[in-house]
Image (cartoon, rainbow, N blue to C red; front, top):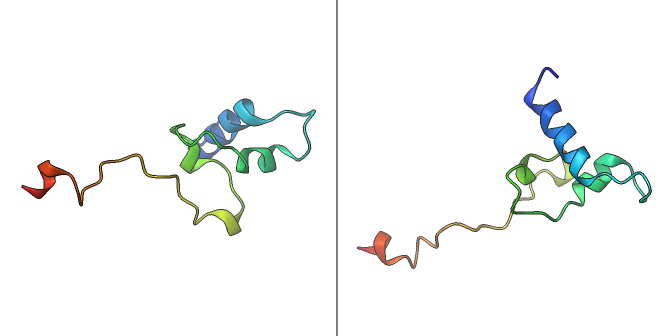
Length: 69
């Protein structure tokens, strides 16, 4: 395999790509909506779409009583 990038690409392709659906595998992977996948932020994307970030599922630090004390 050789690299982490190739491993992520192959896993995303295996999960998302359907040769019977329109678009190449990268286009289908870019359109992935499984945001709770650990690889979602690392999935292959075009340079124009790289600033996109997954919705946060973390703690709201502003309103967390443990952080505020």
